Amino acid sequence: MAMDGTRVDEIADGIYRISSYLPGAVGARGLTINQFLVLADEPLLFHTGLRASLSDTLAAVTRLVSPDRLRWLSFGHVEADECGAMNQYLAACPHLEVAFGALGCSLSVDDLAARAPRALVPGEAVDLGARRVVVLPTPHAPHNQEAQVLFEETTGTLLCGDLFTQLGQGPAVTTLCLVEEALAAEAVLHSAPPGDAVPAALDHLADLEPRTLAVMHGSSFEGDGGTALRELAGAWRARPSEPTEGRPVAGWLTR
Image (cartoon, rainbow, N blue to C red; front, top):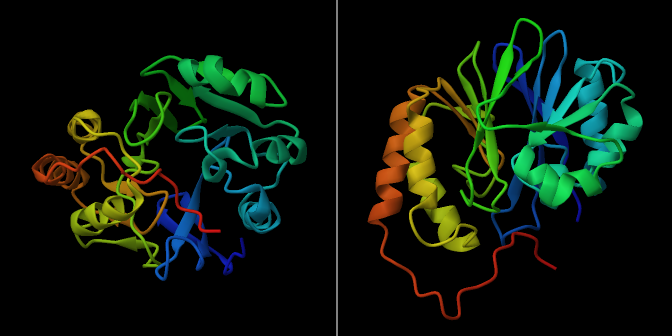
């Protein structure tokens, strides 16, 4: 699938969004796929993007940090847009190590990764040197059992994966409320399971009171992240229930 360029924007101090736009995904509006680079003594990349976008995303990363300095790689869950280029990054970056939740490692990453990953227990922190990121499991919120997010403590940035997904191509970061756009995207994508998994995860993450929400698909958010998370949790619970019979299979790639 053709990408429409790759752009780089700083969304918090030392945290960069590397974004590619897929105009042919999810109908007319398309979809962004975003990676996030946390600069530190031991830089961390959150998400790899698709294998098809490797040359563009790796070139963007290289503008910010040399591949031989890139130390950590993590992602929200095991799916092509999150970690499709994992082994290509491991081949290009000699000191790179995957850091992922222990459950996801045992289910998938131990076998998929070309080098053995570091398995993280819930709440464990990865020390990047002058920064730490904490792993927080979010099972089935909104995707697989091994789903997780990372919280970067220095800037209060929540690397929140597919939570707050929006369709289309907006600004890199916004102060506007994302709740309506997130609900509209879920109505199209049907990516999350029925039940309380997503709003319960949102309520739990709100206690972190993040100042930036780094969103995998769509614009990131700057402002009162705790309130934004609680508002999306409340709106998610208030949605009319959807019939499960005949519900489309989750997926955003159109063929």
